[in-house]
Length: 83
Image 1 (cartoon, one colour):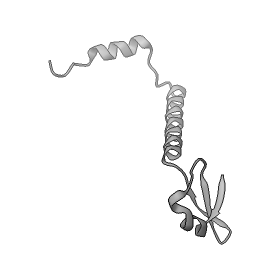
Image 2 (cartoon, one colour; image 1 turned 180 degrees about the horizontal axis):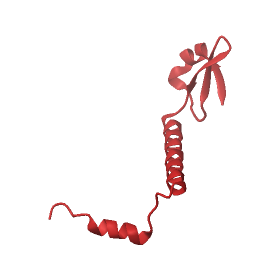
Image 3 (cartoon, one colour; image 1 turned 180 degrees about the vertical axis):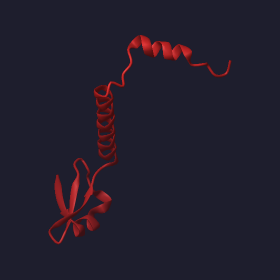
Image 4 (cartoon, one colour; image 1 turned 90 degrees about the horizontal axis):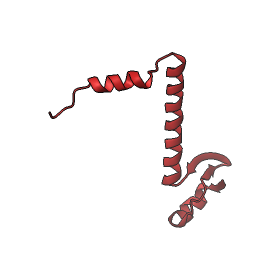
């Protein structure tokens, strides 16, 4: 992870390379992080996946599960729209 000052970012904004995130500092303190859209999207998708895994784990622990046969029976009872 690169660390740069706000002044550096202002001077080089048009040609910044974002293979890795850049931490932007002001007065020696980190104030911003710049990252590519692809990196941000991958991180967001990873967080969403972790949330789904947590919800699934909680459902399993609480006994909110169905057998394959129970689910197939539910699906057979759903009316098909458009007929």
